[in-house]
Image 1: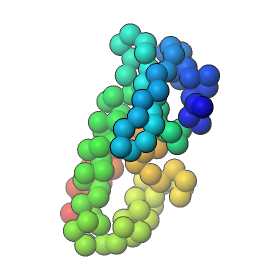
Image 2: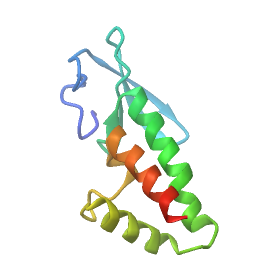
Image 3: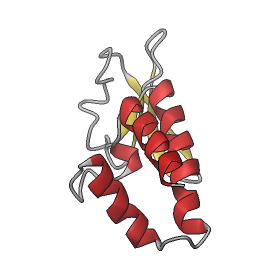
Length: 112
C-alpha cells in the first residue's frame, strides 16, 4: 500500500520507483533514482534531503518556544500560522518548503 502522496510508488520528483522502509516513526518511501533524495512519509508528506534538514532545524528552533514554557504549544502553533499566513491544515512544519522553514527560523529568532 503506497502512501497518500505516492502514486504507484513512483517518486513525484524524478518518477523513479520508491522503496518502502520503516523506522520507529513509521513507514516511509525513499526514491531509488540516482542523485534523488526524495522521501515520502506514510501521511503523504514528502521532501528532498535539503528540505528535510530545514524542517529539522525549524522544529528545533520553533519547539523551543513552547518547550521552555514561554508560551503553550497551542499558542505557538497559532503564532506560527498567523506569522506565516498559513491555514490550520498548512500550519505544520512537515508541510513547509525549505524556504518557509528558513523564514520561520528567522521569525522565531526575531521573536526572542
